[in-house]
Length: 228
Image 1 (cartoon, one colour):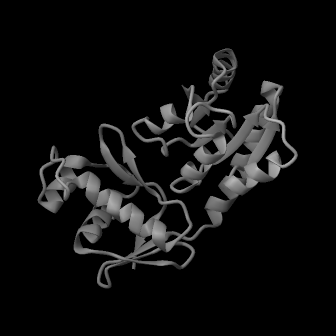
Image 2 (cartoon, helix red, strand yellow; image 1 turned 90 degrees about the vertical axis):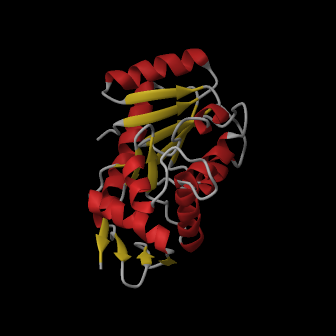
């Protein structure tokens, strides 16, 4: 049980190259990054199915990067690092990582760790409640019971995503429903609308926000969304 896509963030070019090749041979689509900032500058840093993170990185630290990822992603995170400190394991787990492996580590151990995290994640997803959209009440209910009050614009966006059934909705289609230009960078443009909706959900629940951008396409709701 392996993820389809994986982000490998490590500043050691030789280690990064050989591990990426090994993981690729297992059928994983690996994208490598030499720093935290390089990942965050990606079109959608939260879109990967799994993350392998070093702790000692240029830019923000690995611990800070994990915290950023956890704000919008429930993907598996395994730390592979040579950092030595008495409390490093506690720091890693507190930041939101699923597992810690100390360098030097065999690549087979990395695969075993990824599989173990994926099995737990799959079990959790199967038992998770869906997100529920109340059109009449203009509210979104998270699986943990949290309620998000929606503006008319928020509701329109979520209805589009609901109708898409988990598939991406193009920017053009969303903008047409909202009565906005697809190429507009104005304060009330699509990017700003989605950003405000994400923030509203983040303030209501600690769960990862399932609203993701699809580079050069549009947006999708990655978790199950139903209408009530």
